[in-house]
Amino acid sequence: MGITKTNKHKLSSGFGWDEKRLQFSVREPFPSQTTGTDLVFGVITRKSPLRIESQMPENGIVFSDGIEADYLTFNSGTVVSIRVADIQGRLIC
Image (cartoon, rainbow, N blue to C red; front, side, top):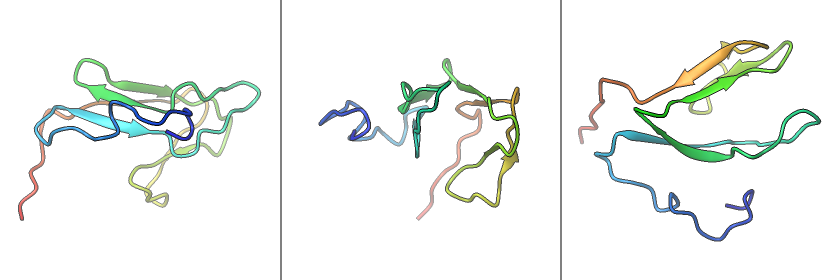
């Protein structure tokens, strides 16, 4: 919310465990001469996956859950599509 200069957002309180969606935020949205910071958070649903195309000529990577060592190469022209999976995991306590 600090990045978007708002005090509250409709996604700030989360959502139900049974909802078929993902919520994302950009960890370090740094603008450059060719890119902006217009997309810093959002929702991914089965009907609206997140599609990202790399513009980094070299040394680009993509990783999840803060585990940088578990990365995929993500150089210029590479496209990643993130969507809600067909199979759902279950948390058992």
